[in-house]
Image (cartoon, rainbow, N blue to C red; front, side):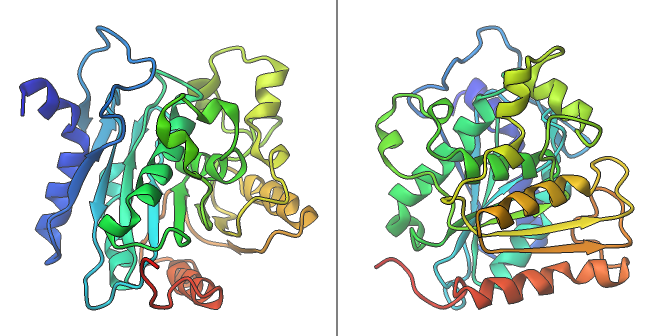
Length: 311
């Protein structure tokens, strides 16, 4: 591997090394999303860098594959979109514990390293949809069921997960590559304290600026306010938020849940009293810390954790 290639995989490699040191599972696999060339790649954009467990200046998107143990694997897979306001990716904070949690449930995890402020939209949408299409097209190789591929996102990563759920067939998500013919629609989504709206008092100003620029048009604000993009084809959703969140108000989750209800989309939402923004899998928050149990129950109720690999 050349020095440039090694640097381009730095963020995912850091995540893989960290997680491998903490688990007894198989070694994670780093998979480039665009081996034929990243769409709209920027010459002279500088190197990706890692600071305090966060990846900046993503130029070469990847997924890092954490395979479920063969003894427990049930065929489900989840693409994990870390948060970071579309400026950075919190890969250690949100890409370590959650893959472990998923693997224990027999779910294979794919941590997404997606493009950020240096590109803006639609690059992140293209990356998450490409990840879904790639995994679905290689489902037998990854030992997953193509009908059980979900997306989980936290904070701005929640906005990206919700984008995949509502804009999986949007022209902005296509690049003209042959894989565009494969469905990018998630089978289900999980949103943790998500950014949803780009408008009004509940918008997260930092994510909006990184995604859409300093002065986005009303049309752009409407397009990327995901409560307005829900349709009858949006997949089932599970949402978690807290009243203590002062970074991304819980009204974001309320707006999305209300839109799902209008279209009669299966959805479950848990609003907790305690917990700061970005609480993830913290164990010291009382009932809030039990959200993974509620999520497991929801997944089982839909049959997504039943054993059933590639048909």
